[in-house]
Length: 170
Image 1: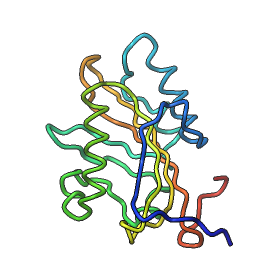
Image 2: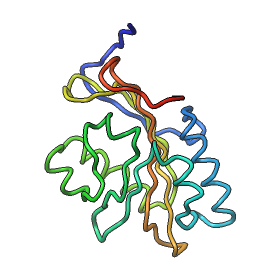
Image 3: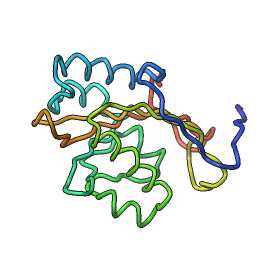
Image 4: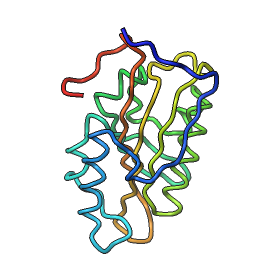
């Protein structure tokens, strides 16, 4: 059995998309880059979402909030919840630290229109967490080339050993 070092405090860092290593993230980033062409970001496409659906959150921008349209099947066990249909404001009431972190990242991508890589360790300050490490690619999409209307957040989780099964082939 693998023993993971778990830090006292959770930490994360913004990284370039090239700094992300998990296969689902690399697949989604590659498809996103091909779709955008000369645009700053592409329109939402099943070509990206379908390729990484098990490891992705599809998030719709709703006024000053975000709504989780779907949560990938590989992610639900890691968060012990399916957020589909919830708004980020609702999730933040139940999981404040998690919600504040997501809002910060989502707002940065939404306001800049730039994709973002983020990775980090989950510490003892989040005692219910079922994973110890995560990598994320937050990719903007929009019909209007000047306004982000959806985010696809592709996520890879490293579970705390034995707490939930990893999907086949991961």
